[in-house]
Image (cartoon, rainbow, N blue to C red; front, side, top):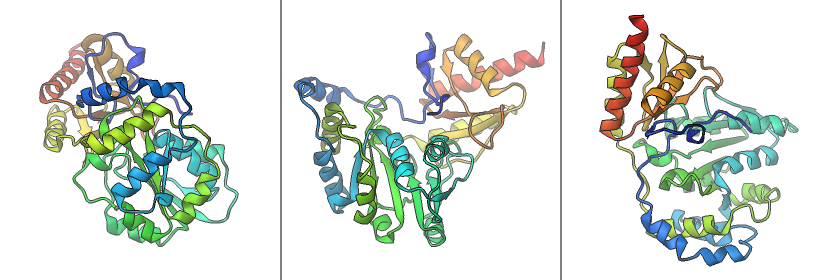
Amino acid sequence: MINGHGDDIYQYDNIRMNFSSNICHHAGLETLKAHLSAHLDLIANYPEPEAWSLEKMIAQEEGVSEKCVVVTNGATEAIYLLAQTFRYHFQLPAPSFSEYKDALSMYPQQSPLTGLWLCNPNNPTGEVLSIADIDELAKKYHLVVIDQSYEDYTDAPMLSVREAIEMGNVIQLHSLTKSYGIPGLRIGYITASAQLTEEIRKFLRPWSVNTLAIEAGKFLLTNGVNLKPDLNEAQRLVQMLRSTGYVNVRETKTNFMLCEIQSCTAAELKERLAKDYGILIRDASNFEGLTPHHFRVASQAPNENDELVAAIKSIVEEQVWK
């Protein structure tokens, strides 16, 4: 397990604004809370050993066989499950989500077959590969795993579940956590051909998805609205950060962005923002290929974005004039 992810708000007492997690904040969860409150009696019984009822609903939503869906305890459980199932020689582009490398190190290669592991949209850069690019890559490897956890956080076209299944050698990871803004409930799922999911199910742990998470997933698929970040506001934040003259920002097609600052380290900036301004960012220095000066932020409400930029300017200019 990797330490140093975003949303480590539990380490601080005074955070007012959280830019450290890519998840869209301010989601309206009141109806879900009310529904779960009315179904708390479910905790008195074991959940389904495998979340069959939720898998069936997802399959119907995607227009595929329920054999092609495997529900997991968040997308992160799916990552480790796939690493255990397919002991291929995987290529890992960098920078990208660090749990891929960690999972593969736990389950070393046992096969001469080749694989590619992608995050699309990519965390932490916000880059998006085209469907044509993915199609070409799938022709070069025995297996391609695509983590599409942030698929609802971009306007760029995404490879559909049906398209991926038809390709035969593509596995997709999805995250209801991201789509509905419920990181505390841990609900993810895998989609792939029935042949591939049959292998994956051999390594499933019984009861890994709890009863309330299953109930929440079914409720949200019926009544929820997928979160859609304000990408125009995200681009405004990109331009504001760049206009300070202190922060370099990579192009992004999502609500989150990879930044670099030279006047201090990301760790120093994070601590100053948290301590003096109640603002939390993601120190991105532990992503492979990045430096101690890289950090990531996810766009929030306009007034919050304004406060973030003003705080960074104040911190840097204070150092300049010392």
